[in-house]
Length: 255
Length: 206
Image 1: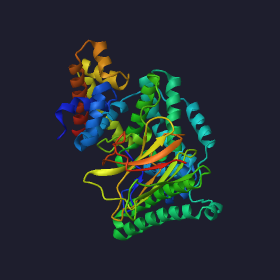
Image 2: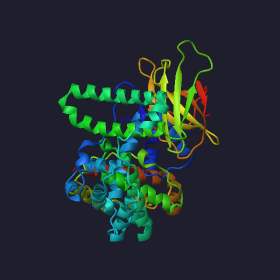
Image 3: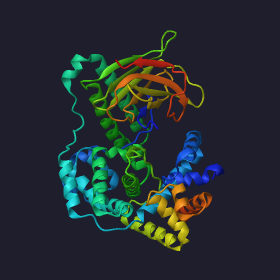
Image 4: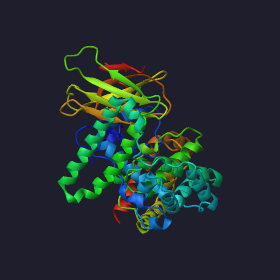
């Protein structure tokens, strides 16, 4: 095991959720940089799960199931694959962006299907996840409060790096498409930040552009209902950061 | 941290089958499906699949919540909350990184401890990754592993078992445990770590 011994005990405490204060902050900073300790933490959490599974107690009452079934019946899910056609005519360019995402995803899918019969099962599962993701993309892009935001650097050469962020507070969705992004230093990545009207910047996805400088971030985990004042991009370690590292290299107002 | 980032070049994706779900419509059809298939069916709105999954794991979730909270009504609230979250966001469970039972157990424990400490949820479902070996997808496998862990806990020195349980089931911080037991902080840390490693070794030795 290549875990750093000075953190070995704190990792166990952290896995049980009982490490606090400065020790926790120090460990979390270390975890951002140390893959071995991250693996050990995951394993220790697995060990803790064994502890959880030893819990024994009474069976849940029958009414609990009835209560759950009644509750989910009141929250029917949207069936995937029902795009809202009138929107496409009104916002053609947004539709085009959505279609690019879909086409790229489907292209990836087809390439994999051709590569090996052995991965057919995995690809089938992937398609399900991607269809769901695509549905969420369309939901975000068609939201009544969706705002297209261009993010440009203060100084740039042609063609300039550019990012477009479409954010819906109502649907808690964010789609970000970047192009012409500059190559990154080793072990670094771009990180997108949602700058709220109040409070500190919120991480909104870490991304690395491909060889053409393009990248997409789709619906990163964000707290619900945040009003976006702006979006910004910084360069961070590959795993991302919890607070932006200056300087901000690109920024765009939330409109 | 950003698990939804999608580079334009081919990338690893979290996957769940969808195609087969569309033919699932009755509880009978869901019988015998593995957890991944049930999660996929839930993703497409199959309420029978949700009921099936509840039947499989409500006991695990309820037991953990009851162990932490010691009260049936509060445990029932945790049970309801967790299965509702799973209904709303079945993709939070990554079937490629572990089994559903230990994942739900950890989620239940975390939520129950948050409730015990009267605080807002500290960890999102989507951020919880639980890696347990060996495979615990089957009731029999899980039962054997749990019995082994219980045996190790029984043989463990009482102060060590107590430190583990105070941390995990009672939600105390390491400094609170030190304060309550009168033991030095370093001793508590060592007991907790070696206790967890003992559990791991017991399972690995199966």
